[in-house]
Length: 78
Ligand SMILES: [Zn+2]
Picture 1 (cartoon, rainbow, N blue to C red):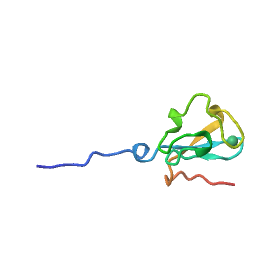
Picture 2: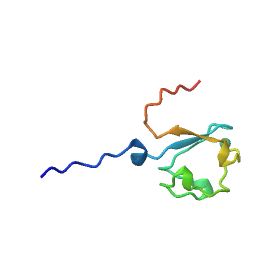
Picture 3: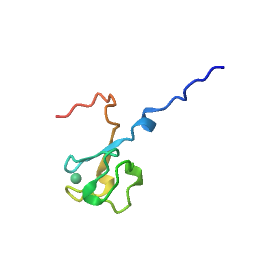
Picture 4: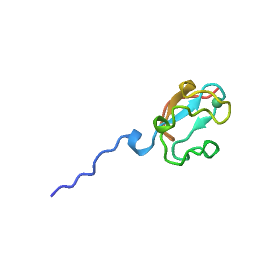
């Protein structure tokens, strides 16, 4: 009997975070957003369509996917 653990993608383990390109706020799916009553564990894709950046009020379209927490991106902040 060989029981192989199902391989999980990084996306399944840790949902992607999204950064507001307007103010730099980062939406963390694992934390949700208390200011806008978003419970922890809510993915960005599951946010209400009228959800806006709690800091600057930018629309969802302004946010960009910055990858899951701890994922190697080779992404440098300036
Ligand atoms: Zn913002």
